[in-house]
Length: 336
Image 1 (spheres, rainbow, N blue to C red):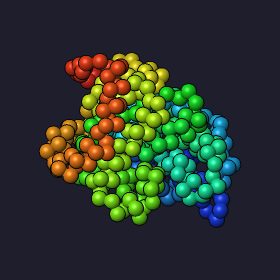
Image 2 (cartoon, one colour):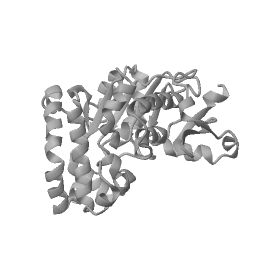
Image 3 (cartoon, rainbow, N blue to C red):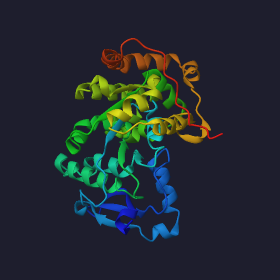
């Protein structure tokens, strides 16, 4: 690989009035971590990689660099609903480059919050260029490219469709009460008041004054509404309860990713691991989450999120019909 192909953008920021790209060397690393930032942290800890770190103007970034893959699919999601599992399963194959919530993409999406002069047309150009830089064939064996986005990016669906026309996408979701419980249990920056301008379209001060449970429920409801308003198709909806089987039966085919016996076995093996901590075996905590619900959580969810969720479910039922028994997860072939 040439030096350009061995580097990847890790940040986009406005410095002294100029939007720039911060680059780092990838080296022998692959994007196999549950999240992009985990790979970045490992790369920047190596002195040799830091020697290749540099800043370049964002407007000079080539939208068609050598070896760049066009995205085969985009993953939007409602947060805490299985999107990381999907990314990990699809990324189990070396020919699949799967990036999970890369910071430079979010930096571009939210750039108008830091610079009011940034137009949608400019964001479209920047998105194409940044995603192309991220989607290079860094090791030479990559053939397909899937991008998992941050949960609040559902509010920018039109922007992504304009930047990547014709690229199929999915929206992963689950029962909103379970999501509210999850975020009440474990803090996430995306659901904090600091992210209110992107998530809620409101100021940080107003968001901070809102009861936390109400804020989470309203954010979940607004994401459901955003997808419905945009005009999501039934085929793009993937419910948490359909996982992991939907990964190789519906999602991979939707993205045009070949699924043979080897691919299905690799995806099935990855799906049996905890998506955020692959060293552990996955076990569902749905019952535990429901046990932790409070009256405040139920009331807030019912008021702000349940109705748009039910509309998503009604649309999804037009595709899947009556609920069926999940298929068996493929297992890797044993040589013994």
